Length: 567
Image 1: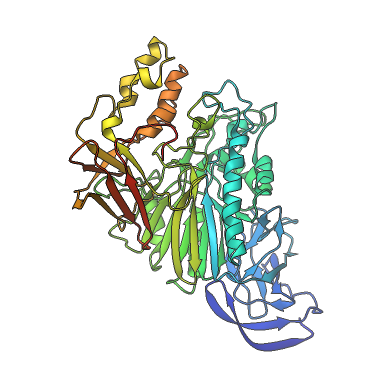
Image 2: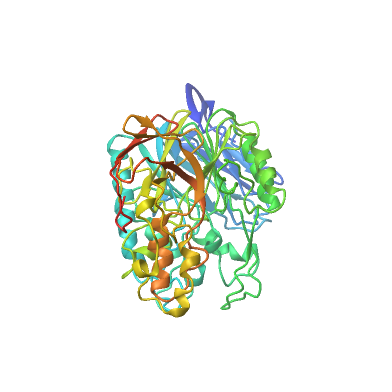
């Protein structure tokens, strides 16, 4: 099999475990084939075979032997083979997409060799920027109720903001990566005759970031001309790569899942179906996940799971939440797969607001919804609207920044165009009375009738000296302190709507004589807090402290007006 072997005394980190290093001669003969193993190959770095590297076809999972050699029995259903990138190595990169996978060329009756060559890199300390729900298109669907003519112009601000953060970390010597959480495109725009925008156009956008990107598929990233899950996801496989996979960066193990089962009844070539889907994990993906996680040696190292639809719903004011959207039993089934790990973070998008939740029964697990990078699907920044970038929970459109140093993990939410210390917004309820006269003066009679519904709970004057604080990155371990002079004010967590979102989106839609989209209308959320001041003009000192000890403050001079440009 091999003409020359050497043993090296070095120890090298592979993923989250430590393995001895073996050297396979670069002049070795072909790897000996094994009966029933129709995919085989060598995983190496600098002509050195890497042991313990996990390899999969999306069904079967194996690991390289002491010499970096692997064998897989495969039905080749996905048409590719991929490795779980070891923690301190990295594959080649093409157009800012890591090439941890290779497409197969032969059918299942033919054995083929697929090798992977990796480069050493120090990822023990790294940063991941997490974003999603960009819903890119070229602004040409003028008949759409959510038509926005300047999406890509608005995106330029987001791109510049993120590249500044990336460049800052790189200048400090910290490796930085992107991780998306789905709905990067809008499938209804894929096949438009004038300037279509699909996955190939999205792949072109990725080239403009100053680092590489790991990607997650969302419901809007399926082929509208493909009926059924297998047909719907084929375009993603052809252009982006595997729909589910894993990789390591430093000590952390990352898993990307596809929890969209595409139904799309009535679709065929050239014909868009009903675009229906179910939020679920296929049985074969669950089985793959179990096999993948069984390969992780260090269960105390961070395990980060990315998928599109959240695991948990947004918590209520009592900080309780149930499983979100996943078909009956699957939420618990996924949690059961994660049992045994002690530091698990599940990342998702889909719903567009921010929320954070750690179930009391599973203190080792934290679930994050990352608010949409597009704000409210770019709506509030279109010409003639509010000229701001806000999500339907009042969060600024933005992205999560996750810093890892060995096994230590920290994070914060970064609003586009704002300093990273901008983590909350305050409202003086005495000044908030949302009326058509103020915010929808152009509405016709039919749309004026919508005003009382959309203005709640700010449709009547409030003179109770109430102040509301929207803390969009709130977690149960955060603390809030509000002082009026030297007096600490009692704080109550409440569920309410963000008034800036209401006037920026809902009332701008009414003012344009169209009903606000239910999917983008301001929602009720529970990352709000209320205090009652003693007067209408007192100044409040507000301090918010996150679980990492970072302190965010505002000296709130009152009265404070509700305006589109407020902070």
